[in-house]
Length: 106
Image 1 (cartoon, rainbow, N blue to C red):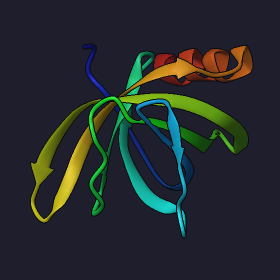
Image 2 (image 1 turned 180 degrees about the horizontal axis):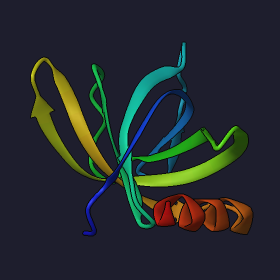
Image 3 (image 1 turned 120 degrees about the horizontal axis):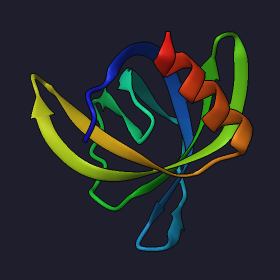
């Protein structure tokens, strides 16, 4: 996978699909994005997500909000006292992909 460009952002995940079923979350899962590329992103948190979980995220890039960005957890590893995840983009609007490509060129 292509190297990640630094992209720090604290976001909340309100929806997680596991094995095709929507998990009910009593409160949002807080995630810290560390890096991003045109294929996906890398993030950490203190909860345990599983490979193949699908997350529905809201991101802000260059001051503009992008909602309902769908990502798939492709790798999980321990990172200090947290967990580090590699995610791939699997669904989002064209507007997000255009902004992402522009961000990666900077």
